[in-house]
Image (cartoon, rainbow, N blue to C red; front, side, top):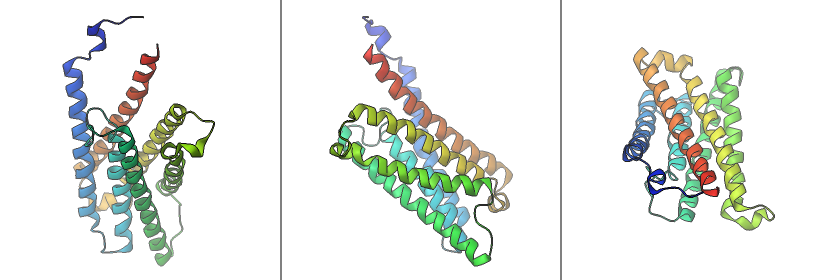
Amino acid sequence: MVYSKETETEPRIYGFTRTASAVLTHFICIAFTVFIAVLSRPGTSWFSWHPFFMTLAFSFFMTEAILLFSPYGSPIKRFPHKTKGRVHWVLQCLCVSCAVLGLTAISYNKHLNGKPHFTSWHGLLGLLTVCVVGLQSLAAVPLIYHSLAKGWSLAKLKRYHAASGLVTYLLGSASLLLGLSSAWFTASAWEYTWYLSALCIALNALVIMNQVSSAYTAKKRLQY
């Protein structure tokens, strides 16, 4: 089938909207991370490191790692795909490191206070998310060193990695949302900041979902 130039060229307003949403997502993930850092004051207690590291992991590092591949908002848009892939993996390793540190901080804090571990949905989902993001980063190694995955096509590996990565990101977003309902956050934040924080997490998730789904929808269109 032959497409006309008009049907292949996306409207300018569509491209502008995508660019604006990507820039907004960069701003939101930085602003939300700074807000949680100010609210938690890392270093004042063992617990204070938990919200700081978890937000740094899933709101900042993981969001920025995925936005590297955005055709509208990538800070290294002009770099080759291989370079983007390596920077993406570095950011994901930082995400995993922060997530493990955040999990360690809350576990040690509960141990000091004699409290049971993983008794809430936030705790259980958070533990699951940390395990999944660690596995996701390890599973990405064959994408960098393709010789480790003989018999698998690179295109298929990328497709699986993108799909599982999106699920992992949504798990992280859900964990952050459940964290907003914790006793610490509800006691530390004002009512309107709760809604703003929830909106920030939801908007980031929507933009990332749209980016990943659009990328693979476009690739399928090109195959026909």
